[in-house]
Length: 280
Image 1 (cartoon, rainbow, N blue to C red):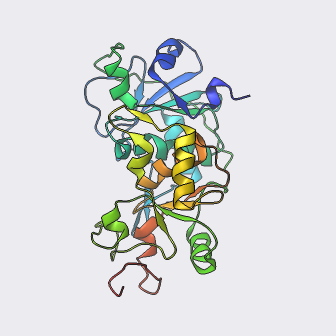
Image 2: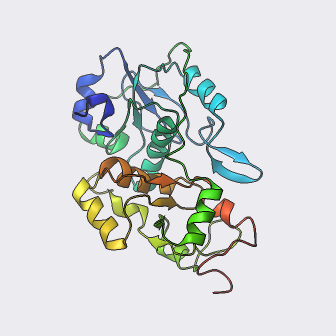
């Protein structure tokens, strides 16, 4: 049975009723926050606080365990807390702030974490109370129990590309997948050889401010030919976290991993093959 603290998604009505729980921590990861805050929530800027690291010129990588323990403990989050993550909710890309931090908590072995479906936009649209300033908490000790099964590091991705049997899911736009456009983070345009495309926005309704239900996510995955053991990627592991969250957590598909280095890391070495790239 899935308890409240193990539900990947919670809605604003549930959160409003849970605000007084002593083990609940509402962590706002908007960049920047606008329009106020959920009462009692703390804020950590996704883009500035250190949730992602640049290593050897590659942006967006998972920081070291000790770095994350200090970041999370410094926010006053303890191992026993149920963390609910709040993004702006206006688009799938916005929700990536919450899904990437959710994935980070999971890689640290912290399963008591949820995403507020629709983010702050859904909260405010529902007419729930808003305060002008974020709260603070005294620093605490957070101890990670890292797990390796949710992340696809470069050697795993290289083996998947070479083997051709592991589903590779590009979460970017069709233009970037087809090599018609390029992110500044990628050295060249194109995608991973063997990859298929499901744009991250397909998994989230910006109009309704909610993720698609599990059956709809599974239908998209089936149509694209992805499923168990899929590796999701984008340019820096942000948009791909939305796809990872939808497949792994909403739909419950086994073995889905996120390639946090994504195309920024893959294209840094000119010897690595690229589909739809300059020579295509």
